[in-house]
Structure formats: C-alpha cells, structure tokens
Length: 437
Ligand code: NAD
Image (cartoon, rainbow, N blue to C red; front, side, top):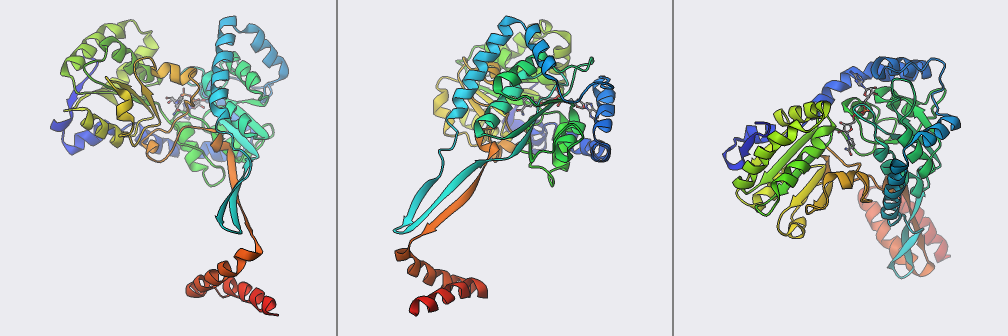
C-alpha cells in the first residue's frame, strides 16, 4: 500500500510529532555542507560560482558569461512553443492583477488627536535577488511569482539567479517570463553558491539587500547562514500540502490532488486528513493504480514522500481535522468538504487555503493569481505568502501642530523622567523655557 493510514486519536504524542515533522532536520544538516561553499564564493566570486555550477549542476560555464545576454533571451523566446507563451502571458496577467491590489497608496496620515498627524511613507527596497529553483525541474512559474510583486513594488535593481541546464543555458520559459515581467538581469547559478553570490556580490552579480525565493535544503540553509548580511525573506523550503476532505469528496480527485505537491521531490510532504474511513479506503485503493500512470522519476519522489512525510490521517470530525491543520501549519491547504467556506474562519495557520475541488494545488501554483511562494516547515504560523509588501519598507512620518504640542510635551516629559532619560525630557524643558519667554 502506497498510502499509510493513521488514526489521530490512537497515536502517541511521539508518533503525532513524527507525523507532523517534515524535512526541517535535513536543512540543519545542509548548513554544515554549504558553509564552506558560501565562504568560497565570498573570497573567489565568479570563479567559485562557476566551479560549483560544474560540480552540482553539471554545467561547464568556462567561456560563458554569468549574466544571460539579450541574444540568449531572443533565442529562448523564438524557441518556445506558442501554447506555453500564451499560458505564461495569461498566468502573469492574473498574478499582476492580484498583486496590483497590494500596491501601497502613498502616504496616508491618521489624525491621532487634533494637531497630531502620523502615517507611513512606503518605499521600495533598492535591490532584490530572486531565486528561481531548477534542480528537479524548471520553475518559470516561480520566476513570475517573485518578479511580478518586485516589479510592482518598484524595486530598482532586480537580479534573478537560477541554475543552468547541463549545456549552460537558462530555461527558455524562465527567460520569456522574465522578459514579460520586465526583468533583464538573469544570472546562471543555483544552490548555496548563488545565494552567496547575491549576498556578497561577485564580478558579474551585484550584491542585493534581500533574497527571496523557494529552494532546496541547500538554498534554505544558505539563506539562514547569510541572514546577518541579507534579509532572507520568507522561509520557503520543500513543498508540503494537506487536503482536508469529508464523505462528500470524490476519491479520485482527492487522490489526484494529494499527489500534486508530493511530485516536487522526496523531501516534500503530503497528507490527507479525513473523518470518513470509506473515503480513506477509496483514496488508498485508487492511489495504487494512479501511481502506475505517473512517470518514473516523479513516481519515485511520490513513493518516498508517502514512506516518509505523507499519508492519510483519520480524525473523529472536522473540528479535529482543523486542530491537526493548525498544528502542522501547512504551506498549501485544500478543503474538499461540503461547505469549505465555513471552515476558513477556524483555520489559524496555513500559507494558502483553497476552497473546493475546482482549485487543485496546480491551478494555484501556476495561474490563479494569488502568490504560490509560501512559507514551509511550520513557518505559516507567523509568515505569509510572498507579496508586494516583501519588497516595500515603510518610514513613519509624524507632524505636530502648535495647538497639540503643549499637552504632548507634558506627558512625554513625565514618561521620560520616569524612565530616567535626562536628555529626552530636557529637550522638552528647553522648549518650555523658551515659550515662557
Ligand atoms: P534548487 O534550485 O533549489 O536546488 C538545486 C541546487 O541545489 C543546485 O543548483 C545545486 O547547486 C544545489 N545542490 C544540489 N545538490 C547539492 C549538494 N549535494 N550539495 C550542495 N548543493 C547542492 O531546486 P530543487 O532541488 O528543484 O528544489 C526546489 C525546492 O523548492 C523543492 O524542495 C520544492 O519543493 C521547493 N519549492 C517550494 C516552494 C514554496 O513556495 N515553498 C515553491 C516551489 C518549490
């Protein structure tokens, strides 16, 4: 049986914890491996980046520029199938429409009291590095999920890094997507070496203030190690999903959707949570025949996921299902229940919540418009999906009129004296003396 079944109430606390665990521990191990790579890129720049690209991606970049040329962009566009181009144009437009609503509307001031105005001035961050993975498949979808909000925010310097294929070229759909998004700086490089290049800069790659993007454990580990130098953005590691389904769900669709995130790699996780043992049995039976139709490499990943971080959890009722979801805090959550909307208010922790069977993870990953770069490893308890806000920072702006100053200064002086901050209070007393004449 590919899908193991577990009854939540019969599990020991230890088993529950193990079931809710995912590949976080691997990331801790990867940190040891990537520390010397980072140091090497810091000291030797492009030369080290190229060496690691040969070692890990099998691409010999000797004599090739790290930055992708305009001619390579043109060749990529010319080589791409018309259907793929159209699909990219459709998806990018949806993502753009969604993210436009997140664009801040200039300075908005609030009147705290008559004469006291306070607000926030928003500004794009100056430079951002976007990591587009390409270990176990290329990800033009991730490129536009990152580039669209960065462009809408108005980031001036955007640098995209992505591992090249074995011949050294960058995935053509990624280049076409970058062009559609309006980003022309694309660099060859993946894994920890690319993150280090974005953090320290190399001869070809300019240093960036923030690095955003999902990736393998090596990418996640490098971002953690470099967090003193760059803002590493949201933790977006190996994909994970939960499908919550009740007896009204279609077992074939539930199974199909359960397998979606599992095909990303052996380190993904995928759980079905249901209160229906009939549905669990039907999904499990269907999974056996469905698995045989899946191409070999992806089938291998799916097998690994369901022998590690995946399976079916049987719960007493939907209340218990939600409790498990909130404990796990999944990156992706889909509700295939009679009234999915009724459950939304009870869900505290999930990167995204997809309502019903017409929103499988695939449409959300590619084309619905909402961002598909999401927090993993339980980080959805405090983090959110990538958005325009990731590329914006805010300065508080305050103005005080004459009429409001006196009262404000009196209360401030009392608090500063209490805290023992002499100069805080004195600055106000000097003003007071002056106004007394
Ligand atoms: P990747 O580009 O992240 O990783 C490949 C790179 O890892 C290679 O370029 C190489 O440099 C490095 N690498 C490989 N083996 C190494 C080793 N032994 N030592 C050091 N470095 C090594 O691509 P990927 O592998 O496909 O991973 C993408 C990940 O992103 C998947 O886990 C997927 O689930 C996840 N993902 C997450 C989200 C999200 O929103 N959270 C979205 C999409 C994908």
